[in-house]
Length: 235
Image (cartoon, rainbow, N blue to C red; front, side, top):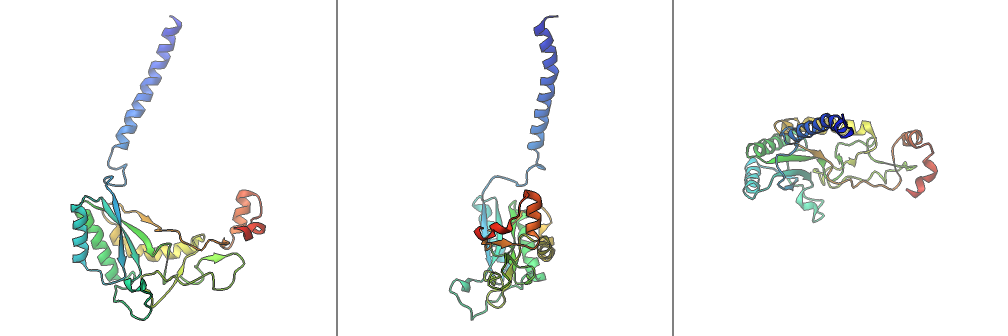
């Protein structure tokens, strides 16, 4: 047996194994189960200004998107239109935030989108970062060595503007996120049936100067082996 023959006999089983793994991988990658989204068609951000959202309007707009070859929508719940004019006097009629009526129309939007082959994702709250009018002072964002309320400024971009203002949650606090997620998640349960939906933070527009959470220094030192506190004034 020559040296070349020996090399060929050794390589053939290896090449066969690699080829079969590639074929198997391609089959997996091409399966519908592997892909989160139904197509690569573009989604559009769909702002729902705080108001009385009607099912017939939802249907009309989703039908328009389908006809114009969109792949889906990302629903974002934000303030009423009169906030743009800085109107703090008039209260725009709207569905109560996270109420059964609110949940019903959100679920309708998702179910109808499913029925016509559109995807439907959701921001996980009202406004840009996570937060709403139900966030407590204890769960609100923190700043290093700041015990005042100045850093925990009111969340004025929420669905309930201007009648009620909450806070941005402390995004570094697991318990704060759990409290928030329980309330938000329960209201979204009916809308999460059917095809998979993405849940996301619209924009992490959180006051970041000396951003802090209780116990952060201990976790940081354990992970990176030095004390972060002497450096907080430069963050």
